[in-house]
Amino acid sequence: MPSLNLPPFEAQVKHADGKTVIFDMLRRRYVALTPEEWVRQHFVHFLIHQKGYPQGLMANEVQIVLNHTIKRCDTVLYRRNLSARMIIEYKAPEVEITQAVFDQITRYNMVLRVDYLIVSNGMHHYCCRIDYKENRYTFLKDIPMYVDLTD
Image (tube, rainbow, N blue to C red):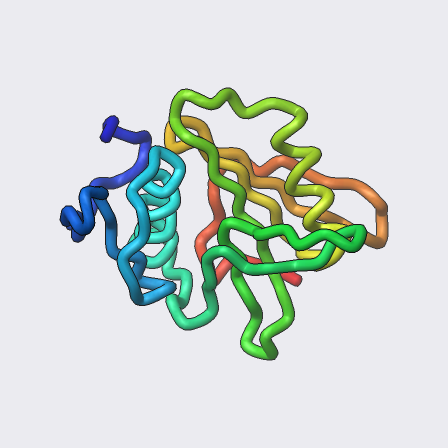
């Protein structure tokens, strides 16, 4: 797998049934190691170990219903009251972050109404904060520390 613009971590990778799998600490099981999963695992470790996000308030592959279809948010960060606070969408490193990617995560947010949206392909990371009162969003210069998140 390629090097990413994220800190390295001790990935638990193995081969099972002819496939390469990686351990997902949030789902507590091995999952297929795809380029997008490689980004997800790096980003989750980055959030927990570098940015102080509580592992117990994060979940991967969160199912939502949007326009009568089932969709999956790549990662969701929750508040302590278990309301959604942030959606994170991952793409493989070779996938360019385009308006279509932001449109995808924005559609998910129609259901969850979070305060923060993050998109990453492992090389480029974009975070925006949504202000529902002013009906606008602001791109942040960096991924915020957990203690600096505001509601």
